[in-house]
Length: 245
Ligand code: ASP
Ligand code: MG
Image (cartoon, rainbow, N blue to C red; front, top):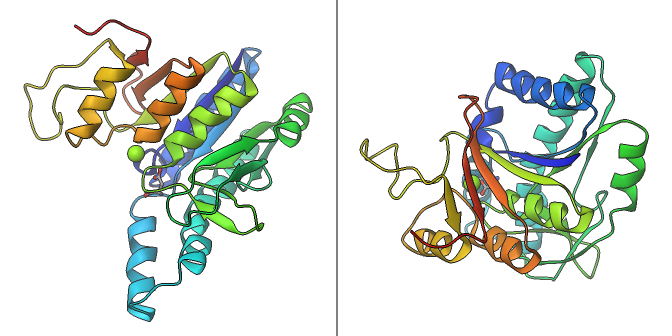
């Protein structure tokens, strides 16, 4: 199977967690799967970079802001590749442009317009785990663009669509999609499955578990997305063409 797995910032926050993510991917490869990992910036990296930018200049140049913010994901990608190689499996980290991800020119909130998957496919054929920096692409003028806060989810779903992957998994710090934020409401209920429309409603009410455009992309391309915990080992929530409850 070809599996796209996205790891959020908390799932890569320290070396042990990076190791755990790498180990999961390596085990899947050893069972005969091909793995593309999409990684977010670690911990609070993106917020810290934004804060520094505002300290340097209150009126930010959007092009430079995207060049800056995209660095967080590149750090994660390189570190994850190193962790995979430390386990004896070959890996390659790719920036958005190396992965062939084209976007429009809306700095800070760019839309993915196309993905040329040839580099990723070549690396997979060579037996490598491919680790793509999430949240970024390259615009019409060949400048780095970012996809909006939380946009790594959209990178993962778009890659799953263009690669025609068999599975798209979003690893996060909660074990699925809940009707309310389970970190605030202990009695929140978890969905086993949820339809795209209902998922969009939850996002409209402030749920941050998935980037809105990732759900749009999934619906338009018929991708079922699994949202699951990077820590619990339990099955998560399937977001797909399901009836509302
Ligand atoms: N690092 C970016 C953010 O904090 C993108 C992401 O995490 O998906 O919004
Ligand atoms: Mg997120």
